[in-house]
Length: 356
Image (cartoon, rainbow, N blue to C red; front, side):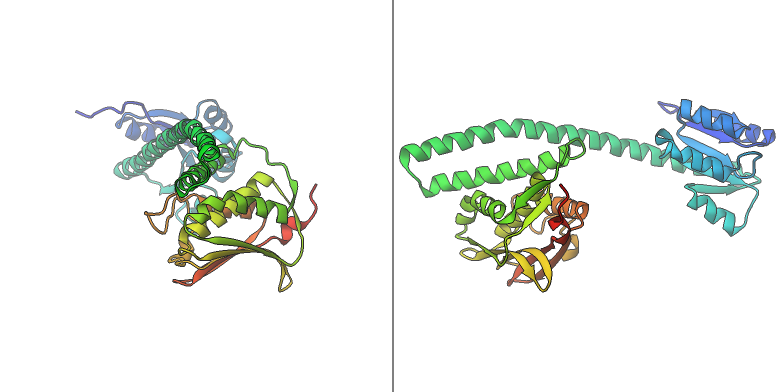
């Protein structure tokens, strides 16, 4: 006895030959799919828009609108863009098969139909559909989980920060208080990355005019406690005062993540040099550390990648840097040598142009 699917998988069949519709209907109903069939391309488009199918069988040679044209029309609809389309045709030449895939088809079956082949190919699409649904649900759960972490994290971090400042006023500065402040800023920094990832689609990013000297100086001050815990000194060098035109929050994510990364992988009692200005005819910002270097440069901008699991963070920082730089056409160069250090260089020519 066949086990029925919890939710029927809906298949729309479009073919101008009635006998083909009947034959495919008979084959697929054996597997308990919900079959809808039509010989009219215009009706097929209306039906698909009204009730989105999970899979479409589409004949190529049809009157009025051929399969390729109908496929394009279907893919133009937002709700149908991801619906898989299997082309069915008596045409067996390589040109038609290639065109079918170029138009957005996921498979191509030639007539006459073999029942077992049809069933196997549909099962493959069903399995892919189920996998996508699982992934989609996992991503939704992940999004909710991240939002909950952000909500639960913000209040205690603020309380720790406030009380640390009160303790420092009462008892004076100490190494212990400095360590707490540094750790609090690390948590605050992680919160900032999570906030950017979750809210970036719904947030408006207005362009600001930003003086680099003032801005970078403020970011270095923010990281002062964190750098001090490793005895690292951060130097700012420049040969020309520069203003850039970029959203200030996005620039903050770029600079903060680069400085944080430099501190993370720097050696104890070393230094970090931040330079901005004109160099070799280019307007740049560079961040140079004298640390352990980067093992796999081709992976550093990937989401969640971390060179070492022992380092604190989520592996989102440099992925965010790359994402924002791509948005503003900022070119990034990375030079690194093991146990010598790393230099991140940003070509900021594009954001020095006035866009206000």
